[in-house]
Image (cartoon, rainbow, N blue to C red; front, side, top):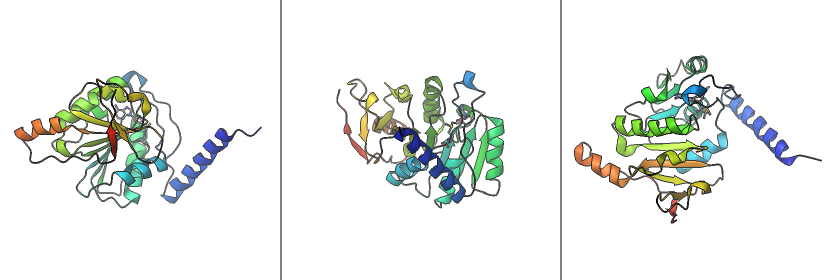
Length: 239
Ligand SMILES: C[S@@+](CC[C@H](N)C(=O)[O-])C[C@H]1O[C@@H](n2cnc3c(N)ncnc32)[C@H](O)[C@@H]1O
């Protein structure tokens, strides 16, 4: 009997491999993490179709500073470059061996910086687009979102793209973030109104932005007008 799911997975794997080659290198493969005790997940690379759908729906602005949190071998960084982004790009990777590979791969790009270290201690102050492919557990995710809020000087422009958003509930009860997702399991909680997200795929993703309340309170202190980006939302889910 033909196992269609297995065949489809293989097909997708080969397609991804070919796309890697077309984009100038091999950025795939699986590396088991040595940092499970720090809440880290293993290294595997994002699917190209997810990147296309996500950033097709949420275009990158010239002024954005792009951050791949847990950049692994650098497929996302490479994809941004191949799509013509001339933005400042920062990849942060906990595993030194993998970070060194990524540093080698992008050594000729003046706009790319690959940082070896724990993302919690290396959030770029000027970052606006934060991409996360499920890099770590709930505890680290909770700390991460709080650090972004504390550190980012362009807070009103921040968007967090959380792909395979297993620990989206780290944002539950935090009034400073607006959450939109295509993932059903987080909807229907009256105490935590999560918005729907239509990005033309069922692969679980979430987009997070500072809430109007959070922008408002910070604006009064330090910044000019905030902007509100979540235009692809499909309405607040009621419990
Ligand atoms: C699933 S991979 C994603 C790779 C890449 N972002 C992509 O989408 O192709 C997650 C990566 O996050 C890294 N990571 C986990 N915890 C981290 C942390 N606290 N700081 C920086 N990197 C971390 C892991 O070592 C792993 O390489």
